Amino acid sequence: MTTATDSAPVLTVEGIRKSFGNKEILGGVDLSIRRGEIKVLIGPSGAGKSTLLQSINFLVMPDAGRICLEGRPVDPSDRKGLCLYRQQVGMIFQEFNLFDHLTALGNVEIGLVRVKKMKRSQARERAMAELERVGLGVHAHKYPAELSGGQKQRVSIARALALDPKVMLLDEPTSALDPELIGEVHAVIRDLGAAGMTMIMATHQIGFARALADEIIFMENGVVIEQGPPDKILDDADCERTREFCTKITELGGR
Amino acid sequence: MSTPFSVLQQSLPYLLQGVWVTLVVVLGSLSLGLLVGLPLAVGQVYGPRPLKRIIGLYVWFFRGIPLLVLLFLFYFGLFPFLHLDFSAFTVAIIVLGSISSAYQSQILRGAILSIPEGQMKAARAIGMSDAQAIVHIILPQALRLAIPGWSNEYSVLLKDSAVTYALGVAELMARAHHVASRTYQHLVLYLCAGFIFMILTFLGTRALNALHRKVKLKGYS
Ligand SMILES: Nc1ncnc2c1ncn2[C@@H]1O[C@H](COP(=O)(O)OP(=O)(O)OP(=O)(O)O)[C@@H](O)[C@H]1O
Ligand SMILES: [Mg+2]
Image 1 (cartoon, chains in turn red, brown):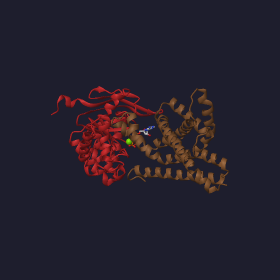
Image 2 (spheres, helix red, strand yellow; image 1 turned 60 degrees about the horizontal axis):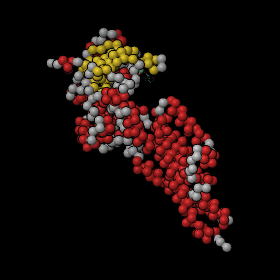
Image 3 (spheres, protein in one colour; image 1 turned 180 degrees about the vertical axis):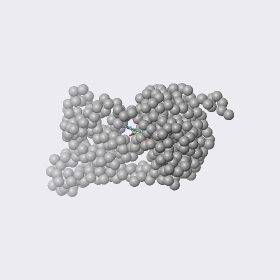
Image 4 (tube, chains in turn purple, yellow; image 1 turned 90 degrees about the horizontal axis):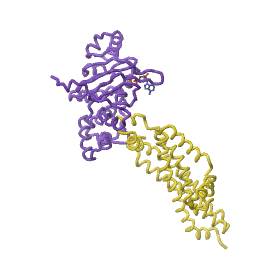
């Protein structure tokens, strides 16, 4: 049973376009996600998945289009507003992008101290709680260089979670990891989903996408080709091109 | 009749006072160079294009002109023209500091540019302003990387500081020259001055190397 506010979208993306030089990378993408929903972006390399995710929090400045958080349009030229918006949209990168000069704890804490202006002691407590949530309490005082890839990615998830995001954007969170480290990160993401986190994730891990997603979005050449429930898109897509891609990728990745 | 040894013995306290002057000139200009060089580097990496141009010109100016020319230009030319009555000592620090700021800005610029782009993206993604990202994320890493460059900058400044004797700054070289021209013990005095410069270079670079090791990030080579 969903209430009216629950079914109103948390985030809507309308007509996002982006070109680099004269090459169009995003050709008008629309997307909307409700609270607690998980949408997974799939598509061939170069489809524009990363560009889309980074456009959503303006790490890449879209040329056109509109983004609304809880119905309010975001104006990226208003710097304060943009910073406030970004706090509410957690971003997970393929290469983790942890701050190399800070410990795991420092990485999680710094947003609370510098951005949320929380008191250091309070921030430390919260940061520690987030690290424990991703199973890294014992590694809190290690530097990124002392952590495995899987641990680094979990720290980066804790760093985003500390700011209480309303949506998380995950850009291939496990594709830079050794196969034996993927599981621990998937487990954390699965727990997030179970806890009701709203997420948009790009991934090539098709089995994981099937298990997790409420909806899969197939993108190619900067546009959404088809979207729908996982089983529909992965096994029985309407569009020829979607079927072709999904057949190839399910053969490779297994179901 | 004074022997080389007795001259040295008598003039050593006088020379050592010059060491202090030398050190103040060097540390003063090194600090001034950092104070000015840091914003220059940040401006050159993150600033708007016209600002980058202006900084480029500044760097080109101070790196392109010989030290002695700059010292004379400022001491005998520019400052009197502006009715600024600065002592030779002050001018020495201003000129060496300005030159050093040009070099340090380039050391720091290189260091900033070597920080992976993802660091800035991650900082923005957690809601930091660009200024916060630069201060809390980029610079703490870049400054660590810049220490070997500073070590080099220190030893260059130390040697350059000897040239300020031409303005009459009573640093080590000026004092050695002063004693030598009175006692004619040139060999021993300049050897002694040279030796002291060598020791200062050695100690300074040792100290900076120690600092580098101390702040080096765990797990990085
Ligand atoms: N800063 C940039 N400048 C120029 N071209 C870019 C830039 N960023 C991305 N591109 C181009 O945009 C296209 C889409 O890239 P994007 O990284 O969004 O694809 P993707 O779907 O994430 O692919 P992958 O699965 O390989 O991660 C690519 O052709 C890429 O070369
Ligand atoms: Mg990508």
